[in-house]
Length: 190
Image 1 (tube, rainbow, N blue to C red):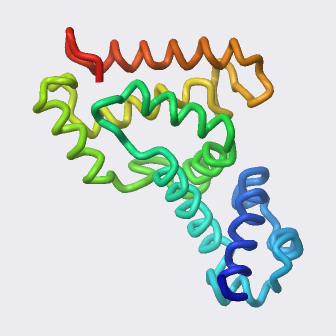
Image 2: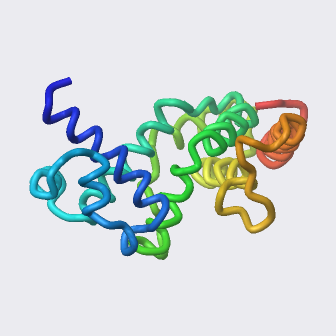
């Protein structure tokens, strides 16, 4: 990695921490620049504005989740559990998404639908593994929503990595059962 790429990486990492804690309006460019050891001028040259940096951070974090937790439409309960684990170990993901929802995109889609994921669910539907009375894009959205049940933005209980293992195991089991019951066809267990 060359110096420019290393500087951009440090900026994205420092900005992710700052934006997750304070949102876009509350984040301070001075703190990001200092933490990243990159001048504010360089930051603006790379990303144009604080909002441009936020967009780059959000895209980077989402790309990281997609890479870490690929969709397996033949195992939607397992996919949901893997998302739960990522949200647990990387709570910034959820916090950044919520700040984007609050400050940038208050309605409509936060991220464009991923045609490959929708097609994967459609194939599982055609193979008789997933309910067909719910559109594939909605199946995917519901699985993600269920995986967020105990996320940092939960209205019920925000789980942390420090919770007892038995609590996490219980939640994983419950999550898998809920996804299985919500989207699988009787006799099939995607």
